Structures are given as C-alpha cells and as structure tokens.
Image (cartoon, rainbow, N blue to C red; front, side):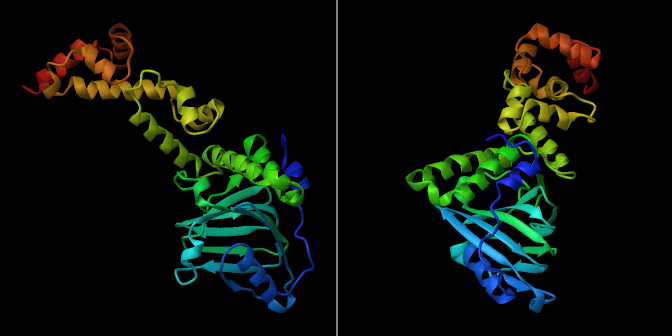
Amino acid sequence: MTMTSLADVVAVAPPASGPKVEFGSWTHQVERSVLRFHFDCERPRAFAGVVSNRPLADVNFVDMESGRHAAYRDAATISPDEQDFYVMTLQLSGQLRLAQDGRIAILKPGHFAIYDSAKPATIVSSDDYRSTCVRFPKRYLPAPPPGITATAFECEPGLPSTVWGMLLSLNRNVESLGPHGPRAVRTVMDLVTVMLHGTRLLPGRREVLLEQVREWIDAHLGDPDLDPNAVAAAHYISPRHLHNLFAGTGFTVSAWIRARRVEGCRRDLADPRLAATPVAAIAARWGFKGASHFGQVFKRETGRTPAEFRAESLADLR
C-alpha cells in the first residue's frame, strides 16, 4: 500500500468500536488495553469515551475517542510487568500533549509520537480526541534512536504514511488474517523500526539528527568508502533527506566529510609524536584513498602541501 496523504491514512483508520462510556469505565478500559495510569478529568460527569483493543500476536492496536482528560505514569504506577513496551500513538483528531524524558511533544492530526512504558510520562488531551495507539514489545526496537520518546513526527507522504497505512489496515483486518496474522505483524513491525530511525523530524529535532549524523561520520572517517549514500543508509534516511539536513550549514555532506578528514590529518601532521609517520600512512588512516589525491585536497583546503604544513607546524614547537 502506498499512502500519499493524511486523508489516505485516516481513511483506513477504524473508529473505536462500542458504545461510549463514562469516565470511570473508560479509564479501566485504557488500563486493560494500554497501561496503568493515574487519570484526571475536569468534567467527569460530562465525559464520554470509547476504547477498542485488537490484539494481534504480541502487538495491541488500540483505538480511542474521548473528551478532555489527563493521564500520568509515575514510579508508583509503573509495575514490573509493564516496563517492556513502547506505545506509539497516531493523532487523528483533537490535540495531545505528551511529556517524557524532559521533552514535550504536541500532537495535532497527522502527527505521531512514541513513549516508553518504563519511564514516567504525562499525557493531556483536548476535546474531540481520537487516536490509534500501537503497543509493542521493546524487542522490535532494540536500538532506539536518541531522543525518540516524546518527539512529534509527521505522518508525511513516503515511508511514514505507508507504514501507518499498513498498521491501520492490520488493525482493521485483525479478525480476517487468520494464521497469517503473526507473520504479517512481524513484517510490518520491521518497517516500523526503519520508519522510527529515518522519519523526518518536526522543528527542533532536525538539529538532533544532524548532530547524530556528524558524530557517526567522525567515527567512520577512516573508512575509504564513506560517502553520502553510506551515511544515509546507516541512519535509515534517504540521500535527499540527508542532503536537506546539511542545507544551511555551509557544507554539503561530501564537503563535511572532506573537511573532517583534513582536520584529522592536520592534527596528526602537527603532532611531534607522529613526525616519523609517512604522510601516506596518515592520509590512509583518515580515509584518503591515495597520497596524490590527499595532497591535492590538503593543499586546496589549507594552501600548503602536507609536507610544508608538517614542517611549519613542527618548527613552531622548537
């Protein structure tokens, strides 16, 4: 399935089934379907909501509709049997405020976020709240990206809308999948992992991903095959997305890699402890494929040949 817009995604999102219930009954249904919370509501007598839970293998698809409310998880609420899950929620109408790990995500229709069942969290919804939550074991996301919790993502055209379209279709068709259900959900959860590593971040998170990419580049400068395609693949994002991350930094991806390599070579050439190390060995250590190419790049970047730079740097130390 290829999703192209939020409207396409919402079209396959099943409504929460069943009659609307009062606040106390609704909170009990949420606790049975998702996690235990402390709940609060300004107008409990006027509250009405619906929760439906469709389990498939070890994943739960939970559709919710309700009025304004708040839910809290603190150390006293988090039990040992509820610490091994992530909950990913897609906002379909209304607004949700999710706080965890010192971050706050504001979700409007078309945004989604994830939170960790083992950590305190605060959730506050508006009236006209409607969402689909996917509760899944943490083993599906064994290496979560930094800052993944309480961060708003866009269900944009491309991988996010495609993956959410698949999740919501599984949700709608749980009863008819038969013996193929467990395998289908495992396959889609593999795509969820890719999506969470590579989906486009809303304002404020772009800088976090850019810093993560730069740190990864620094750790792999010695790889002579390091290039934008390798960087993009390692972070589960498209090369175009990667180039967009670097837009406005003053560097292209390739220029940044080259500049960091040259900087590493500058440090080594100026280090008296490495005075006997051949220039070609230093160049290879930092990922340059040949001494001649390195010499051309280094002179273009610094205005001096590697030998000239080394001689001047070591002379200054005498």
